[in-house]
Image 1 (spheres, rainbow, N blue to C red):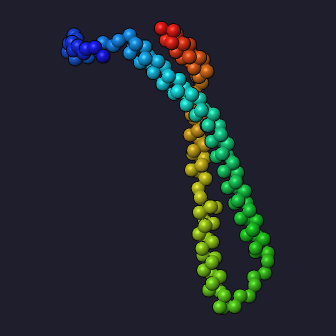
Image 2: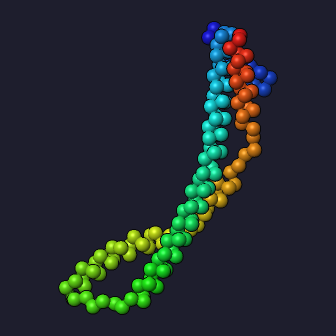
Image 3: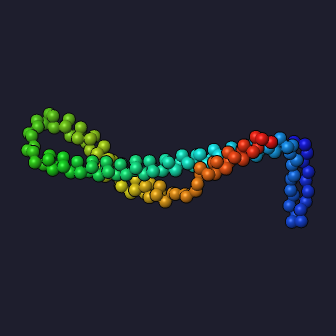
Amino acid sequence: MASKNKSTSNSGQNLVHIKLDFQEAVDSKKNLLLTKANFLRTNQNLKSYIPLRKEELNQKIKLRNRLRELKKDLTSLDATFPTPKIPHILDDHLEHTMDESDEGESVLFNSPPTEIEKTLEKTKSFSQDSDIASELEDIKRKLGELEEI
């Protein structure tokens, strides 16, 4: 960089002018275009991720519903069997193990479905209709022009 000059404009703001060499200007333009191209590729990857995330959330909702149905079926099946007579010695041990298993089930089956469904709604609202491929081609063309300089 050769020099920096400060000047005052009509509005009273201080402006800084920077003199760049030709090669520095070309390199800066290349870096800016490459950054834009990387951003567009990242955006393109994000767009391909969103449908996959939606499908994952739908599968989780289906699984949760199937597990609830299975729990209902197991409960009704358990009610049809007779209750075994358990000796008092084993009764305390059995109650202890049942308490531990009930805690895990309550988290799995009684969780509110709204969290997953809210996330699904958020992904539905995110959509853009831009032609990323044409922008990438435009950036490649500009980079090619800068390489010729």
